[in-house]
Image 1 (tube, helix red, strand yellow):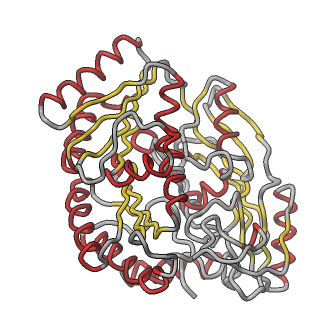
Image 2 (cartoon, helix red, strand yellow):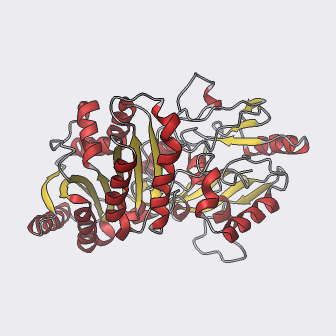
Image 3 (tube, helix red, strand yellow):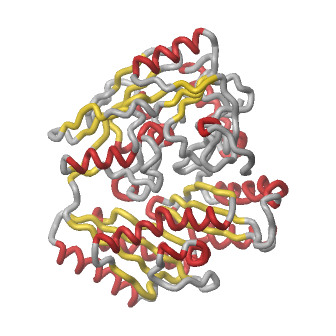
Length: 456
């Protein structure tokens, strides 16, 4: 829960966690990172790697012991190389995500990872949590976009794995081991990333869809109609649409809001290499067919770049700003088999309402890959102290509902310290044992980001 102010490096973005540290160090190169790690390893000092500090699970925040050193990668911010023949971008971990995208675009290429925090999160942080974003449906998450990485090990050695190869089966895939490990196995200092052609035509629309079952039926139709051209399929529940209308009206919703009407809103985007007229006709065909089938009530198609950007601002900034103004809520980043999303939303909402009268459920996310952001807000008329009594039980209810449907309690934001203490409830014992063996082999003294991912 939010509390007193603390130095920026010692508190997470949501102000859930506060820590203490011996120092915050800001090396300016991989060699300096390695030197710092060697020194701290020699004296057995814990290390907390930190990128843009935009994480939502406390993964970059030190504990309260004050024993750790925070190692900021913010100064490792150089673009090292762009290889247009190989379609790769090699950069350092402190490069901001938006800066990476802009560097690719200047060369006529697309780096498709896209997140609302792109102006402040770093590529290193994206790699550490295997971030997903809004275009996973077509391009995959950060791991799928990465060909090679450079890592400083727990002992301060530098592994140069910056290979721009799309095929390399010479031994174990160390790259995929470090990506998503949240700085607990090694510190990623640079990466070689895949680039793609810039799309010639983008089509963006927001649709009014009847019910969450209708959303999943529309997704099936969109995949059939657009194929690989479908790059975005973002869903917004009636309650969160209403919240934007109430708390963030400057985002100008294209449709009226009524949280009691079971109308979901879906932002669809397609990217094509062909002619604009053909892409527009295909979008119209899919929408008309969905209307005829009773799935869609209405739709608005962006007629300009400004309108397209306005649609995406609702999704990427309006939802978050409305929630911020409404007050702190219990955020859950989960993934489910797409076929189980309707019953999860309906049954979990009913269970929360029965157990916690007046509680409010906001759902949005990347339905195309099964990733939902399930945010639970306290009842109107209650204060922040509500969570002191109910947060643990609320989180347990949502997490059990996910697990019962074959889902994961952690989709793209990382385990951090938020979920480290409950991971044993949702992972098989053998799986956790194997993870601990890997941790012991690569960080035998447990100095790298202690207390994250695997609880001590």
